Amino acid sequence: MRNLRLVRRETPLAGGQFRAVLVGVVIALLVGVILLLATGNNPVSTYLRMLDGAFGSPRAWSNTLTRAVPLGLAGLAVAVAGSMGLWNIGAEGQIIAGAIGAAWVARLAPDLAGPLLIPLMLLGAVLGGAVLALGPALARARLGVSEIITTLMLNEVAIRIVRYLVNGPWKDPEGNNFPIAPEIPDQAKLPGLFERANIGVLIAAVVVGLFGWLVSRSAWGYELRIAGSSERTAEYVGISLRTKILTVLVMSGMFAGLAGGIELTGSASRLVEGVAGGWGFAGIIVAALALMRPSGVAAVAVAFGAVQIGGLSIQTQGVPAAIADILQALILFGALAAAVFGNYKLVRGEPATTLDTAGGAA
Image (cartoon, rainbow, N blue to C red; front, side):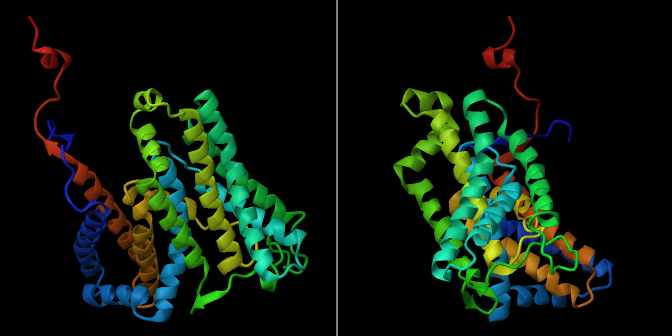
């Protein structure tokens, strides 16, 4: 076991993201059978309940798709940066900044008609996320400061800003002293699509699909992949790394901010401390499962949303919440493991030394 090491495959296994998620689900379900039997629960009925809770009715589908919207946009935010080898760990704070931007627009123009107010609120959300990402983007592009540290630290800044607002100047006087802002105007709420889903599902689908196409099919996306794979090659062909870094990180913040705006105008309806809901951190998992490819984010977000909604549904069957959470974690770890071993393989033997590579010592 001590001589085992990971070596990158010359050709990745076929299937990509779909294979990784599918294998992860199968592994998790098999391990989950043992867990459920050990706790006195019927695995078949539990899994059928999860499937029915996520996809068994129009309402179930609406819940799954609604949950997939912030997951998909947060995952896209992380994947956009990841496509160039960067890590945006600040999507959680950028979602909060987006919600603040949308709420601010609603406070400035509460009497505007819905067809005008909603786009302005979403624009405010996009700008809010972009502003929070701008500092780390400049620091990384101009000074070489790690974007991991700066984006992560700004999460706390965003949390404290929203806490100040809902406990101070924006606090709802009719909120029974709870730290919440007033509800947004009725005309500022996104129109419904079906059941509990609203048109935020369509907005997110268009954004994710359009950017996935842009990265995989356009000249701009080709330059982005070159810049992410080799800085020397990028410089040789005349690609400005500073410009690309700045653009990608700000764009990443914009997508996360949009998630905050859709959440506020959709299911949240008012600004609260927990408006981000952990979506930003979950987006890191979504992006990882999509192998940092924006084109795979949508499918992974729906699958992840289904796992979460299905996990909630089995709690009504008497399955403890902890077991539901463990099943979700097993699926995610299984999928991540499948993604890793699709690109790497375990081999025996010691790593080659410098002398071995050079042909051995004299």
